[in-house]
Length: 157
Image 1 (cartoon, helix red, strand yellow):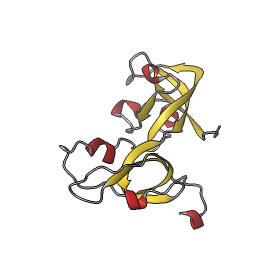
Image 2 (image 1 turned 45 degrees about the horizontal axis):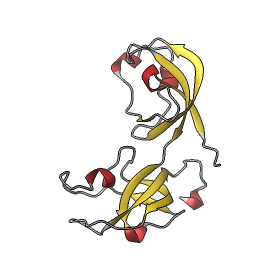
Image 3 (image 1 turned 90 degrees about the vertical axis):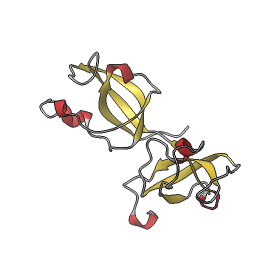
Image 4 (image 1 turned 120 degrees about the horizontal axis):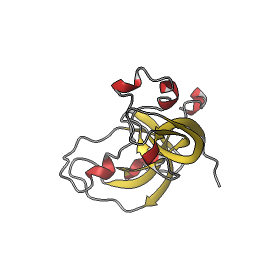
């Protein structure tokens, strides 16, 4: 099984369960004076993370109900619909979210939480090979992506 790269951070006690996924949305005003703020806010805004392990440390937190817990998190894969011609497993793609109507039945799959438009991702799987009809562009297919790791040599980006 693939070993996920993890980070130590702090999340609300309600979210401190293995398998819970969340999008990191940034600091609250109440965080400015907190002594552990640096540990809580060491994630990338807009990315989706999954709790993979719980640590023993708990903390008072004015933002989270029932306080906060130290955990290990890993970036979570995200399913997204992209044009079929770009859908090749183990390739890097620059994702640009399409400009389309929120009333479309596929809107949530084409604009999933955790994807940052204009950033590079690696396609790790193609769980569904059939395309769906799209009114504004090429018919998209569902792929599973992870963010391109920042530490890869420039030749791979």
